[in-house]
Image (cartoon, rainbow, N blue to C red):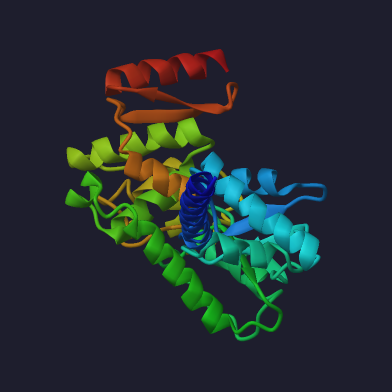
Amino acid sequence: MVLGEQTLHYYLKVFSLVLILFLLLFFILFFNTLNKRTNLMDNYISVDKGSNLELVLKKNVKNLSNYEFFFINIYYHFNKIFFKKFIHFGEFYIEENISKIEILKIISQPSNIINKITIVEGWSQDQLIDELTKHFKDVKKIPYEDIIADTYYFENNSDFNNFYQKLKKIKKEYLLKFSHKEIYNSFSDHDVMTIGSLIEKEGLDFEDKRKISSVIKNRLNIGMKLQIDATVLYALTDGKYNLERKLLYNDLKIIHPYNTYYNTGLPPKPISYVGKKTIDIIFSNYDTDFLFYFFDNSLNRHIFSKSFVEHKKKLNDYRNNK
């Protein structure tokens, strides 16, 4: 009888140790998971009415595993039951590389975003000035090469210079992600922004921009003039794009540093603001044999060719069918 009690006591002791060890490992994994840095899709999270935690996380967090969601869900429901903390709908700004606990704290409070401004790809400086003056005092022109066209969030009564410095930092960090790309063997950050601005002013959609990016790259590689109409328009209007008439053949002959019909290579600086998607296109290094293109009004798209002979034939066919 005594031996049986000793055996039972022994097994209870072993079970207790195993249970303690299990709980210890569980809580270590639990807190490590919650405090692990999070890889977000974007710095801005939008929570729609009726969204649950699973939908919000899977929509905004990259590579979220099932066990990570399991631990986050436990933590969230604990706070929901004992501290009455619920996720709020609205838009939230999330700093990069913060933990999952910090994300839950942010989205469990009212939206931390007061205002937002969208800088549109291809905008001129005057267009951006018009938008900025709605929100800031003492606004100054922002060089095209300094920032990326995107949607940005800020608080009421924000200082323009602080906002401007924030945008410059975001652009620098975004380009830094591509520092290993082979395109840097030929081009600088400044060149990338300049090429991007040409694509923004010429391209219509993603596929169109990809092809135009390849034409620009191909022409630069063989020392061929870019001959981009948008640079002529920029030169004629001092960057205002308000010519209010069609370009003429004589316009292409204007002697101006931005006229890529007159000069070989890239213009001195970008001619518009550039968006992230266009920057991504440049670094994807999309490759074709195209060297020429023109805009077909009837099809509402650009027609691309590999040689001048092919280009001339397609252009003549287009003109004859108008």
